[in-house]
Length: 357
Image 1 (tube, rainbow, N blue to C red):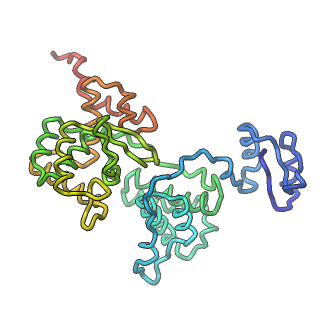
Image 2 (image 1 turned 90 degrees about the vertical axis):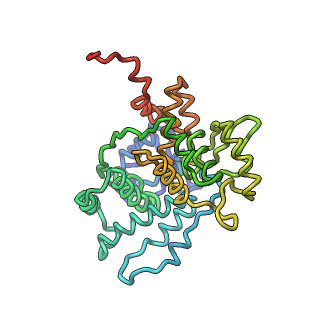
Image 3 (image 1 turned 30 degrees about the vertical axis):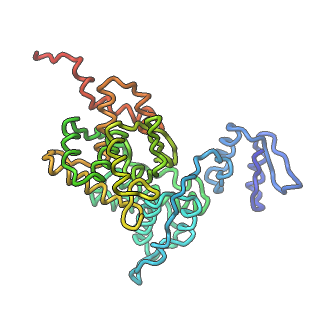
């Protein structure tokens, strides 16, 4: 059933009477109607603009973060701040912590929300409306920020009002920027091999090889544990990838040969790639490894770990691998995300005869 708990109000009581076959529960002291998608929609449209409706208990099928990454929020509480700087409310931070958001997401949300509340230093957060948010977004647009930047700001603001304060669809009417349709940057197989050849040492070579040959995201590479390398099945288990999804991807034979030598020489304890004193290897170090090797190899384009992932997917598509299989290897939730590689794969254009020729 859909239970409707509310403070005594004649308008609300009259609206409830207009719902499909409402009944009253003495045990729970609330009105209720059958729990169907149609009835949920009717409840929303009946009370829209009259009261805030908390739908949270009806959406229990959202993925839950089950990986073992420790959510670190102490950096926020221990940092040195300017006296007049308006800090993110503790309840905001607590909700991020309880929901086990990724540390990168926590930092992004907190920084954007603090930027927003410091734009309105003297204003009570509960009195802020759509006009205020639009004015803040307009301020960001005038600074020529990207569409992605704007969307992150909107997400951080909506998180406070809709998740922390429990006001679903509080700012439903806020316009989002149109999605940018940018093509992925891809380099050739020869350029990938040149980058591998110009790495500084065995550890760096293994990192670049895995990023490319397994199509890993940088965060996924850093979270790899020794037991995630399955040499018998020639697979790599990726746990807690983007969207908290587990998957398997390919393990290259040549990468495995290097990994075996690397394991004997470097002796990692838990994670496959570790920093000093068995600490987690930094994301900045991985980026630096790829960029420096690409620079030594004299690659004209800017090469990042994600460029290697894009190249992995594109080269598979060019060699005739089915798009659905590539989607599984990359861990994309939608095939539409994977379809972008059809726009850069050379075999898409090879079958077309140029009209000049």
